[in-house]
Image 1 (cartoon, rainbow, N blue to C red):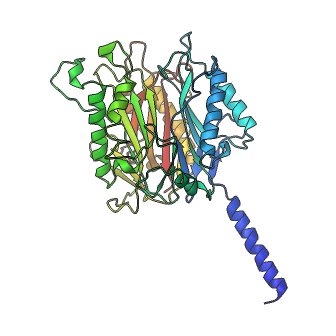
Image 2: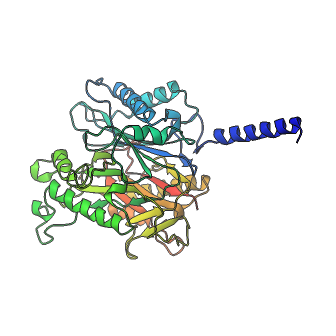
Image 3: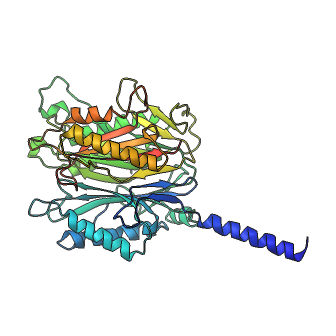
Length: 452
């Protein structure tokens, strides 16, 4: 082989390697001028990183813009510890609490968001959902439980950086970041090629079904509800060959304790949570967010929890035989309108949508149908459909009397899911929020979907 030919082949090889290295790990949908992306598809073969919910912390400014800028800067530092940048953010969710005037300053949050991503040098913004919640723990805290998902072309130091921290791990697919102290890690990495599992939101079961409505003993206090809920989730995971040592992320939605003046017993939730994680029997700690909800209705229910887990190896118990999407396996009873959990085959590209609200006013059913119609268009834009949805979360705003039109939401949902022409059912959580960014908005929906 001539020297010229050798040089040419080497140049072509280097060019090919450079092109491969430059291949983006995500596809972003939406206009460059938009505040956030409509949706983002994550390519297969790239590591993902899930951050726990966090906020501005102590000594934060008094205004929303100031707190939001500080919280976003802390989020930037958190993902940097795992080798990621704001450019690698796929999806961000933020919880906003009312100020002294009883209103949520969505405008201040938007101002900070735009300023942060502009100064971060981003050429693309992540998808986003913003929620109004009753409280973030202390008076004057206006923004918190900000969480994000990051993805990038293979980061060489991603696994090594985690391993240097010496944190206990029991699943080779998981790479935690944070400290040994505390209830949960700052973030949890998932190695490329991992098969994943999403559970539906699991509420606490009744402890005394015969007790009168509103009786505290019907569901028990928050500690009783936490233990019962986590046991149900433990059984859910075990049914597909997983344990709490495989948990990537845990979302907890905590409601007011009406038997104690409507207080949010976060301490009770944490105390019972400690029976299952970060202890001698299970030293594993997932990434986590705990978010308040204004109501679960009048039943005495105070908790709903959902989990993302990663299979430590090949998911032997999972037979990916779905006729709608061969990369998914949905679980649950045939009569249920949702799946109890959905497994996703390793190497499957994933799609995160931004929160989608209605484009018209009206009652719950009208607005939900509008939001689902728009979400369907966004999925189509990404080459997907409702048959590909892994997980769906609906945020609903209670009426002035505190009630939620769940029947209207259910009718709208069943227009698109669990039908003869579209039998697929995702894992799902429906959760009440204090408010949504759109004035008069009753519902906002977000999904995670998988390429077929």
